[in-house]
Length: 463
Image 1 (cartoon, rainbow, N blue to C red):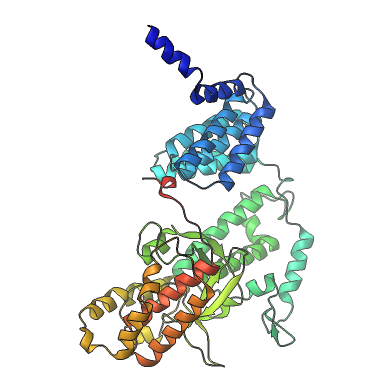
Image 2: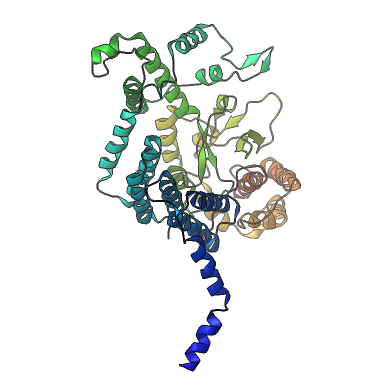
């Protein structure tokens, strides 16, 4: 007994005990002020600290303590549950996330807040393949329908008149030129972009347009205070319905053909997927954007320029081949020839952009990187040209370094790679495995220097 008493005595003077004592004191009484402070502290920690197992646990504790001291059945308690649910979602703990969402939904009376919670719950249920997801969708739609028409009335008849007049004005330069200089003119420039989608895509765009029109009719007075949104005839006879429907459809088609993904600044997928799977799953995407000027570029599976989206919301167009003055710039809308075989590449371009590509890579059926590598591997050193050998030796270290996520690059690396690409294109026959690797390396280095670069540690990913 004496031995155990000594252990207890020493425990009462330990850091662990003092830590528990402090936490206990913070939980003694219910306080909305204390709960809000803990929740905000958790938010600040989540934004500013490095994301790893230890920091995630600290943020989790802050949100749990905020819940513990929050006053019963208050919006503050609902907010604390919501914040913790967001953290759980971030960690891939979707079942626990749903439990916190349900607790917040039971407490809160704030309709927009509840809709936001339901959207997160739907995302969790979709990931878990939950069977009752449609019931939750119906609840969210019912809440949307119940919102006051006055609260969502953001479009007015006067605004519609201005839009109609603006679109009727003749503009042969499509909103891109002023005094013989390129100048993007906002909405007019976006409205003027290409919209020739395929018949299959048009069907989907029409479905989306129908849903938006129905929502506008049910939740606003844009089509008239007494508009009968249950009558097909009422929709067909209303000029504003037809105008707005056509505008939505037009912009939907423009978006499909002209939006670009903002990829995380790394050529290697964070989930180790191939480029096509990464693109289809959007696992390395940070969002989408429309940049009217870059949307004017024609496509090639062997482009001479590439886009880079920066943290400060700018688009950099940089050369990946030497470009003669006065020659055309070519962008690649999806995967380059060395990323994807001809047939699936052509299918994606046809289904998404409604054209058949006839660039040199397609006409000559250039192989993708894997086949280029296989052809290159069987080539003995004696069969290689001096240029090939020199390029391999000169750039091997820089190319290999792109596999290291913490590698830091300089602008001189971009210039150095540009020189190598120029040598390869001038001296080696296309397509060349070595030149392609230098181009891939250039893209990676440029993205690391200027693009969006987010590294997510394994502790944040669902195992």
